[in-house]
Image (cartoon, rainbow, N blue to C red):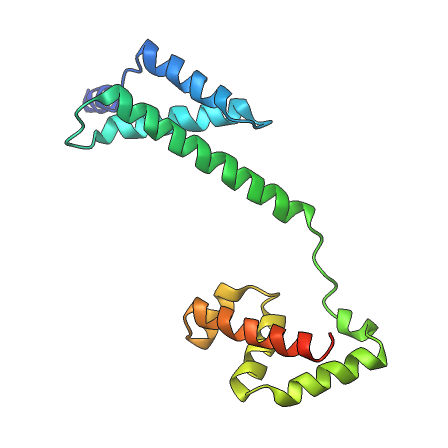
Length: 161
């Protein structure tokens, strides 16, 4: 008996205008996974209706903006996922294929780097170029890591690389 009451409390009615709005918003976004987008929006709507944030003056406008934001996030994440899957990772030891001139240039730049920058460069190679992970491992802010990488790039470009 208690289980039935709990399940009735968890069910939230979705109105027709909400369904139509959901379909309209999903059709406004260019994605090959439109059905998946609609399903994600439906789940998000149910979650939203269960927790009903206080202070909403006009529910239809709130829901419309909510759908557009969630759909935008879905499409953005989908595109990022597709980019990640399409790019082939670089061979882990691509430096083995460098010419002697490239080794010489890198060695000259390496000598001009500070100890912190050489450590950063080594950590970047170790973490496959993931700047956030390097920042966490070195205990630095990610913008500091980006600034140091910029300095390394400037040194490389000045050296002709």
